Amino acid sequence: MSLSKCRIIDLPKISDPRGNLTFIEGGRHIPFEIKRVYYLYDVPGGAERGGHAHKNLHQLIIAMSGSFDVILNDGKQQKRFHLNRSYFGLYICPMIWRELDNFSSGSVSMVLASNFYDAADYYRNFDEFVQAKQS
Ligand code: TYD
Image (cartoon, rainbow, N blue to C red; front, side):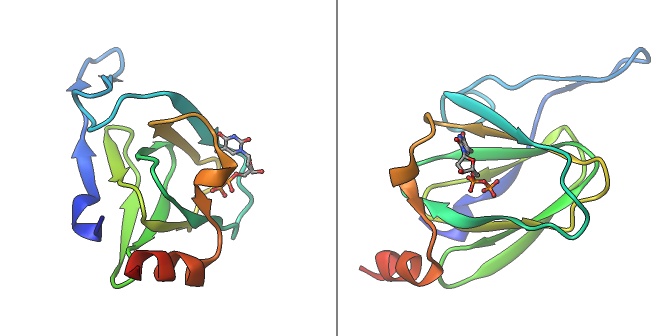
């Protein structure tokens, strides 16, 4: 799984003077079925989140409010994405190291995930992750 598989997905947007609406259907707008949703909020200034990779999990990250950066690394290459619109989602395939930083005040990061929470699905050590990528 390489960085080239990770990409910004342009989500459907129903523009309306009363307020815009975006929807996401698992397996249709994103390349996995959704089994879990979680979100980060009340993130203090200067905080960094993430710092891990998943063995099998697919995820989509959306800036529901405000903005933040997601740095992806496949063990060879690194790329920084700035998320600041609730109709753009960053798709992250399995075996990609990610870090989140540069959170704006009041930002909310929503994550759609392909599976339930499983601590055994994580690499939390970057060197172990790189070794696993090479083997
Ligand atoms: P973690 O995935 O390390 O957060 P982040 O990548 O955003 O920095 O999770 C932080 C803690 O929350 C960790 O103890 C595991 C727990 N957690 C759950 O119990 N369920 C979940 O769905 C998630 C994402 C985390």
